[in-house]
Amino acid sequence: MGVMVIFDFDRTIIESDSDNWVVTQLGASSLFDLLRPSLPWNSLMDRVMTELHLKGKSIDNIANSLKEMFLDPHIVSAIKSAYSLGCDLRVVSDANLFFIETILKHHGIFECFTEIYTNPSFVDEEGKLRIMSFHNSISPHGCALCPPNMCKGKIIEKIISPVNAEGRKNIIYLGDGKGDYCPSLKLCKEDYVMPRDKYPLSVLISDNTDLVKATVHRWSNGEEIERILSELISGRDQANNNSQSLSGECKLEALPVSSEEGF
Ligand SMILES: [Mg+2]
Ligand SMILES: [Zn+2]
Image (tube, rainbow, N blue to C red; front, side, top):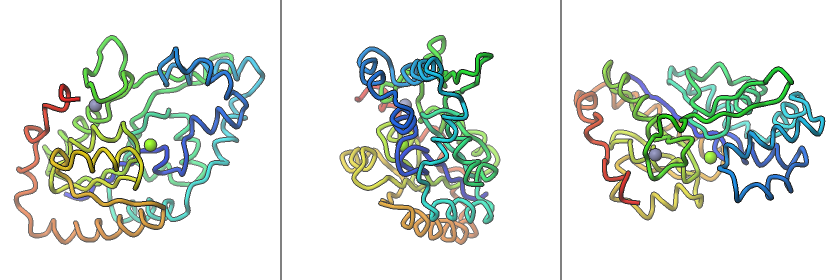
């Protein structure tokens, strides 16, 4: 038993978007804009990394620009304290492993996370960063809500089922974007979803209150994340002591199946 906290990365752990940041900082905006209509986002990022390499930008240039991104100190301390309280922390992100690892290590919080679910990346023999897809076209995820390379809802289902087997953990999910809506639908009423206020996830939740079973807590900045998380984590600890029903109540049959065809 315990609490699992699942974070989106871009515009949630970090203030802005790491893909946009690297593209802008390393001077690839016009190429990015040119190719945007013809390529899915993830393939586009892979292509832009190749172009940056051809222009002489090294992997260190990319890493150094990532290290300059703003990460609110309140979020760093929220993550560290959740970890020290024994929470199971995970990242589910449509960025890529290199970007996320670089930033989390730079801020000394990489070790706090049990697992990072994101698009795989590697540096090839020429020193070029390659960005792959989390889901590939050989086994499509089949979710109409999500982009082809990643369904965060499917990832959440995978995370939840073994956890359920050993005793249900309460989940707190934090995110901002459209891609965070599908996983929010997989949560049950003992869980919490923390959307960034005024961002797409928050709007989607407001428009579909009947579909979202988790309790909603909106936030606008790192200070609010820190406060809400600490309240929820301490509250859940008490709730777990006298709750028998949590383990059986929220299994996968509670998930909305209609979400894959209704949008
Ligand atoms: Mg995001
Ligand atoms: Zn999905």
